[in-house]
Every structure is written in C-alpha cells, then in structure tokens.
Length: 334
Ligand SMILES: O=C[C@H](O)COP(=O)(O)O
Image 1: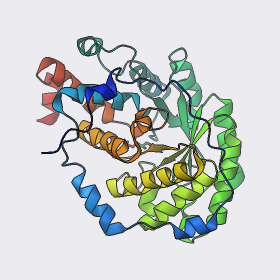
Image 2 (image 1 turned 135 degrees about the vertical axis):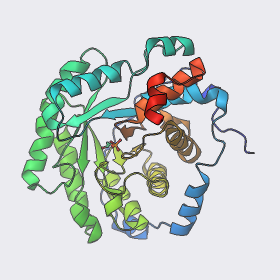
Image 3 (image 1 turned 60 degrees about the vertical axis):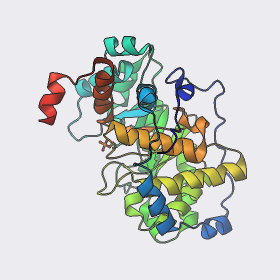
C-alpha cells in the first residue's frame, strides 16, 4: 500500500486562491530545434498512466477537501447546440453555489464556487450578467470551436467579440492540420495572432489531442502553443471521439514542466471532455501534484473542462456528510 500523497495540509481551505497572481506568459521566439527534439516515449508513458488510477493517492478522510478543491478548478461548461439563455443562467447559478448549503456547512466550507463557466460566444452576454458580483470569470470557446475551420479573419474577430462582451478567458482551437503536416511556423503564427486578439483575456489553447495522431505531436504542439503565448494548454473540445486521457495528460504536463524550467513561466493545464466522475478528478489532482507540485493545484493553473463532473462530486460529498446517497441518485444509478 502506498502512502497517501494528498493530505489535509494541502487543502486547509479547500479552494484557497494563490496570494500572488501568476505573471502572464509573454511567449518567446519559436525554437524549432526544441520542437523537433521533443520526444514522447509512448510505452513508458502508457505504463505510467496505467498505474495512476490504482494508486492510493488520497486518504479517505481527506477526500472531501480534495473534492472541494476539484470543484474550485472546474470550468463548468455547457456547449450544446440547444443551449438557451435559461440553461446558461441555471449553469451560472450552479457555478456560484455548486454544493448544497447544508453539505458545505457540514464540511465547514464557505464561499466555494467553480473556477469559471464556459459557453459559446452567443451566450457570453447572458453568462456575464448572470455571474455579476460572484467573481466567477466567463470563458468563451472561440475560433470556430470545435473544428476551428472557419475563415481566419472570422476566428480572430470571434475572439475580439467575446472579449468585448466580457469574456475574461478565451478557449481557442488550433488548426490540427498544422500539427499533422509538421508546419510549426504556421501553428506558432496562428496561436500568436489569437493571443494578440485576446488582449488582457487569458487564452487557453485547445490542442484537440485525439486528432493529433501521436503523443510526440502532442508534445510538440504543446511547446509551440506555449512559445506563442498560451496561458493554458487544454486537451480537447469534448466533441472529438477521443478526449482527455492520462497518457496525453502526462505528455502535456511534462511539456509544461519543460517550459517552466526553460522560461520560468508557469502555464496552466486543462483536461477536458469525458471527465465526469469524482474519482477521476482525484486522479488528475494527484497527477498534477506528483508531476508539477502544489502550485499547479490552484484554479489559476489547473481547470477541468466538464459539464457533468460537478453532479457526481456533489453526490460524493453528500454521501461523505450523510453516509447515504440521495433517493434521486439511487434512482439514477438503478
Ligand atoms: O471543455 C469542455 C468540454 O466540452 C466538456 O466536455 P464534457 O461534456 O464531456 O464534460
């Protein structure tokens, strides 16, 4: 049995924000030698990824605190073709009060919110009004999400419109073709233009890793996007057939570590798509702690892109506090 690596000390305030805000990533010139040298030892990464979920990484007594930390790191997302203003307002209300008050009281937690809400451009206005006064930022998916194949000037204009409407975070999608063709200069130029269009908004680069072919491509695309000024790198849109996976996460997290070692800038990580279970969230938090350290367990450097993860976490917290699952949960699981 392994010693738990996540203890109560790590979560004394559950979702404590860092005291110093991380400086923005200024980027750097494209270093093609570094990109070409980037490797990913697929079998070693897959072996390591396989051991992660089985590790006793969180002692049971501390799980509630860690689940609250996970909530603070969720970009609570709705990205559906049938989104309505009413659905987005409900999402924002949930982001501001993610867990029932009696459960939070029992845990001794106050002021817990999700890290952000994440919507399409069309819903930014609604979301900005709905989160007013809560301190929760609105993230907009942009640049022709999810495929990112609309005309370049329209992708840039979409970013500018979302920033104008009040989005503080922009999730751009890269052109996968640039990666598949090894056109690193084109990827760098695209990312740099998106970065500039974001102005003061934070930019997350969605790599759509399920469509990049190899882990080596994932490593290289991660580096290029960080060199071009991405503040976060994000796995996927949630719309591809393969979304966030542990092998891909290891590759991206290690690219973040290399970039930090070389430049001194901390880049955030956002796994997204298909993460819907509380126990999976704990595996990701353990992975961040293991590979990058405690600083990357804060919402300014780590987010889950997820539409349904919060529901499962809330159920687990309810179980932790009351010792049983609600009737509606038992019914849903039956
Ligand atoms: O980034 C957000 C993803 O689209 C959410 O995906 P999900 O609905 O599988 O949680």
